[in-house]
Amino acid sequence: MGRGRAKAKQTRVARELKYSSPSTDLTALQRELGGQPSTYTTPVAKDDDEDDIASRWIDDEADDDWAASR
Image (cartoon, rainbow, N blue to C red; front, side, top):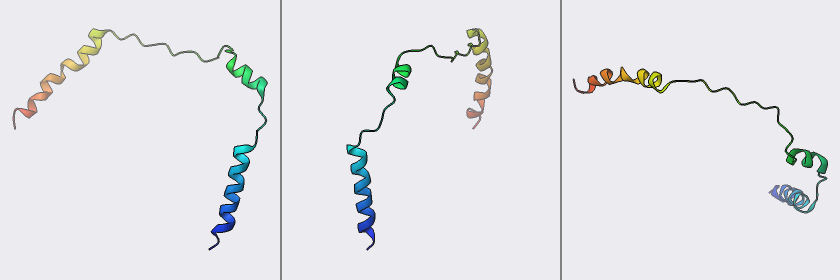
């Protein structure tokens, strides 16, 4: 039966969140949206030749014979 006090607190907190206007740091928001150059660098892609990739899978065709022996 102790649910009344907890529900009242939840309602009060929800009302505060809904109707309060939190202080927003507009200068930080402007900095973030301003498009400042990022320090992130994209990783260098490893150059794999298509022939090299295909050669990895060519030998797999020989391994498929196990299904025919059953």
